Amino acid sequence: SPSGEQIASGGAKGLLQLWAYSANPTKTGELKGHDKDITDLAYSPSGELLASAAKDFTVRVWDQKGNELHKLQVNHPKTQQAMIMRTCLFMTNEDGSFSLMTGSHGPRGPSIMTVWSLSAGAKVERQKIIDEGAFCSTIFDAAQNYLAVGFLEGDVKIYQ
Image (cartoon, rainbow, N blue to C red; front, side):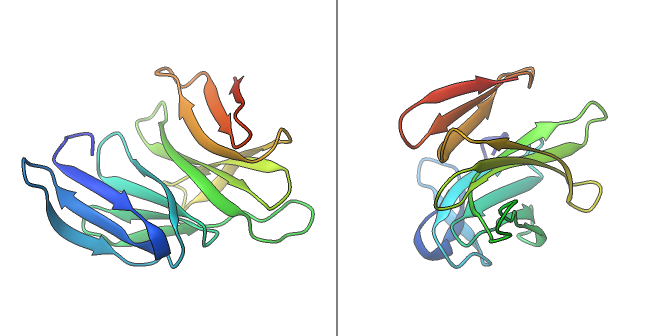
């Protein structure tokens, strides 16, 4: 967490655990909802929210008490099949609210980056289709002007 007081860990079969950070970390909770492997975790900049992406085709947003606030899913634009949610990353908006960017892909192209407005009930703000292949990691620069995307094939590309 941004405060350094909590660690979230995600693993196989949807296991999502919270730990109190100390010399001897202790488990403080378990969040239940996913039923497949966790692929990414992200805290909001304030530490009030935690997002978890998983191979069960969902990203879930949790509050500090472990309540599930949102369950997000992206469907393939042509086939409408659910896509694997690979990454999640919080963005701070100009008004201080948060948006969540998720990355998803199907078994064969394309990958889709989706920005969700959490204050508007988890509505899609915008989407970008990336035809370069399936990706495994994303990160913004400090000013949130550029997005680096790491692809499973080993390439890294920068988007504005």
